[in-house]
View 1: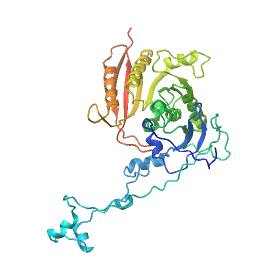
View 2: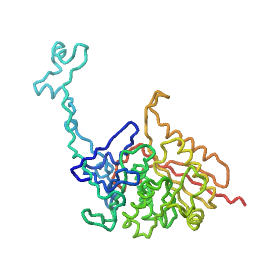
View 3: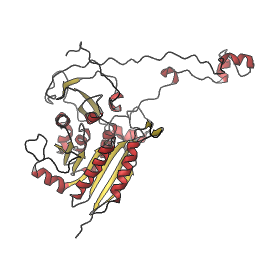
View 4: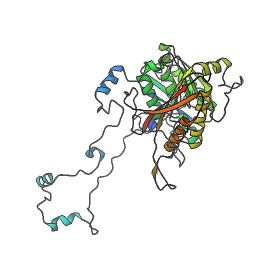
Length: 393
């Protein structure tokens, strides 16, 4: 496929597209390859703000452009009609407040509604996407700099991902919850430095990669060989982010619907015995980003949390970032967030459980600075669950 062969993204009623990709700056989409099941794989860059910019952002919270948030346009720029004050209308020769009711009636239609002259909507000036297929089977070689400067500075990470997927493939996209969690980790490196961290539902691996810039070892886990292969490719693309600190990212399969870890040596992303021992003996932090969107998976996620912590003989901290997505449902006939309500229900159940571990949860205020360029919306939340261990003996 060449640049002259146009590829249109097809959206259907069950297509899901991340806001991260939707709101990225105007640019040509570079399609690097087709994955194992024939989906187009793209690469996006995410900038890590320098400490100076993070400090400036903290001191000037109104700098929305620095935070990656959309800048508010004026009504004229949006193509909307502007309401004028009576004084402005009078000075412009238009009807003033002193006009008679007969003159004012000219602004009303036969039903008594105001007649407004609407401007034509401004056309979007985005360039059409013209993806180029570089290869059909293999991920990009991070050492190959021909034609595209893959060797970036350490303040830019490159992530392979898909776009506009079905619900079962949303892990192949980048979501704002992953970037919020990464913000928190980068703002509190002392809590993660030298730690062994387990990420559940890692998706593209962006949070695992940034966590490994401060942590000793990160187990990046999810399900599906195609998704896990994408994680491994992203880790290779961003070695310059993890190598300075000596952090290690290990991609492994962890299915929430199965109690045991896969240790079959013939499986591509199975666990070795040493890794299983290291996971249970040394993991002190568990992280998960934007994994709350399906009730069955939410239940399975909390069961997995409980099973993992029950296998630890030490205290563990769990950080969960979520995004509340409001929808109008016919069942309730109102706008609600059922996935968020399910999350709170499971969170309360976890705290009510009795055993060697006592669970307590609290919401973390989003007062930490933004270290990555994306739109941090108020629907994003970060929760900390502490699993305190008490020796039964």
